[in-house]
Image (cartoon, rainbow, N blue to C red):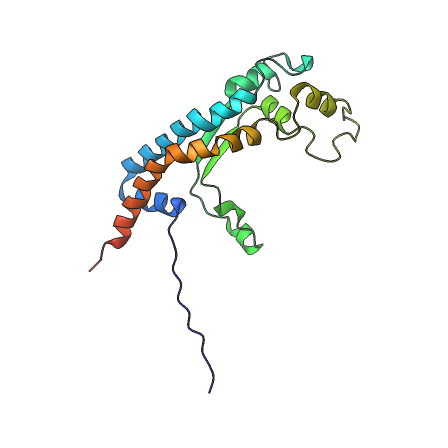
Length: 186
């Protein structure tokens, strides 16, 4: 006689799933939570990142307001976004599920800030016809940090404050989603 494995599973609803449920039931609450996340993120995470960003251009060649200029980039700043999108089908087929993890993202919108943040991350940065071999060492010397100079360093420092201030909003979303999931449909 053949043995049969019987297993039961329980899925715990997280923030992403709860936000999706709340969006179908109460769009105003979903928008309010989105604004809370953005407000708290700007108050904690973005503020911590901006503490690390120098007030002036780190290099003289960036002292302009064009696309890659320091003053243009700094004015655009850093954005906090919520994302409830799941992984793309083409990536799930390949086995990648990393896209399903980020619910709240913090990103820079300016070219100069992104360049200064991550310059030197790639190992072959000093190679090629357009390479500037002194760029990364000079940047490390002036800013005193290696890649990621602003975004990751500031973001990591602000995580405990962000989580603490966001907890009441997340609890409201999860409570509302659980209420909706508990309804018995006849």
